[in-house]
Image (tube, rainbow, N blue to C red; front, side):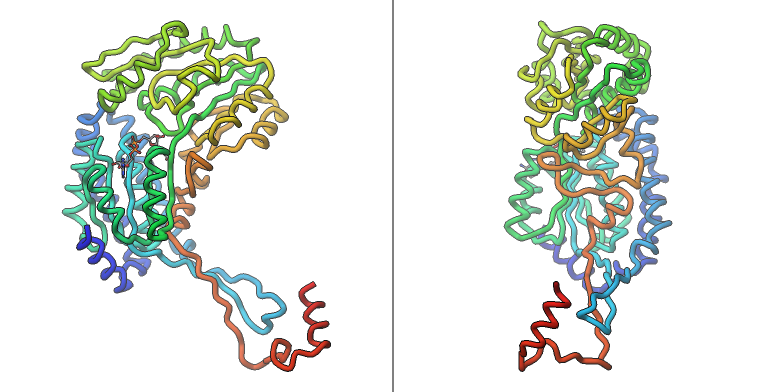
Amino acid sequence: MNEIVAAQKKFFQTNVTKSISFRIEQLKKLKQLLKENEQLLNEAIFKDFKKSEFDTYTTELGIIYSEINLACKKLHKWVRTKRVSTNFLNFPGKSYIIPEPLGVTLIIGAWNYPYQLSLSPAIAAISAGNTIVLKPSEIAVETSSLLAKILNEAFDPAFFKVVEGGVIETTKLLNEKFDKIFFTGSTAVGKIIYKAAAKKLTPVTLELGGKSPAIIDENFNIKVSVKRLVWAKFLNAGQTCIAPDYVCVHESIKTEFLKQLIAEIKTSNFKIENNNYVQIINQKNTKRLISLINSEKLYFGGTYNLGENTIDPTILTDVSFNDEIMEDEIFGPILPVIAYKNIDEIITQIKLKPKPLACYIFSNNNAFIKKIEKEVSFGSGAINDAVMQITNENLPFGGVGNSGIGSYHGVYGFKAFSHYKSILRKSTWFEPNLKYYPLTKFKLKLIKFLMR
Ligand code: NAD
């Protein structure tokens, strides 16, 4: 670890990574590499948790390619020095801000979108002119090993190096001094990363999890909300950080909502062989999820295969905020449905919990939407949809409070890996005497007037 970081520090000092042509070249090289290895990438992710080629393209590779395309297109604009106005006290002078790379960066990925969560931050780091040590999640064994193989063969380790491993290796990495740590994973591990970073005063971006609510207003079109919700919840078998964790539905439409929910799940026919469903990543998580299926509240599904690590889409109903399933992020294909009379009850309950990563509001009533937007704090969200906000690179993606620190995607990724250096450049033809000795009453009066 020590040698890798030392080599990267040395390479960063050469200023090679700061050249825009180098950055664009590396981004294009990465895209080319992924394109050439698409079949292997599909095979590895299928071995890890049976993710289909369709889902791998739409939720991983396609997103990575779009991020690369956007960075290549916009980089000249992002790196530009920005002129800002200069205050009167500094007349005559000019002021500007230069984005500069932070240096040697560490990216730690999660297993649930193993390519996207490792490579989107890496694209941001390259765009901003940094070097990268990438540690993918060891839980997605095959994808981690493939990323290490193809990236380590193609890139100079002094610029971009994949280090594989779990807690032991990550802990060793955290003992090194990085200029930035970008972590995606659970809130619990996020705290460990933050603590390690604090010891070395390393800036962090933490992309964490949480319980993201979906709220359905009483007059909303149930058909549309159900279709979009079902897709968002059962994509990746619920193992999506911004998946709707639970649904709050107005009690007047609960019966019809549940009826249509079940119909939509049946129509969608979520199965690995239909390419629209995946395994739960491992047996530990399968067991954890099964233990959350309270038979008294089970409304639909609840079937599973422990040997195969699969759980069918499951709906729990008559759930209250005090139930066990409402304690932690579910991160699986179980959807609790909570009926409400008054939206204020729901807002109060959501606010009693840590700030969610996402929130989804299904309503055509502006006052209803604005009320939730104003009163509830959350990382990102969508109105009348779920999860899709992540596909718009113009929106910063990240959490707040327990669901994360900082954001990325598009220019926000570039910003996450940059320092904005402020500079005041003074002219020498004029030197007002105001701040120099002797400090007279008149000068103070003038200063008080200028700085009133
Ligand atoms: P995790 O926190 O268990 O692991 C994430 C990474 O941290 C892995 O690379 C792992 O090797 C490393 N790690 C684990 N324990 C560690 C320790 N003690 N010390 C140092 N490093 C350690 O998370 P996960 O199970 O891979 O992912 C699931 C979680 O990630 C969920 O909570 C989910 O919501 C969250 N997540 C968030 C986002 C987001 O963008 N906000 C995206 C995906 C997943």
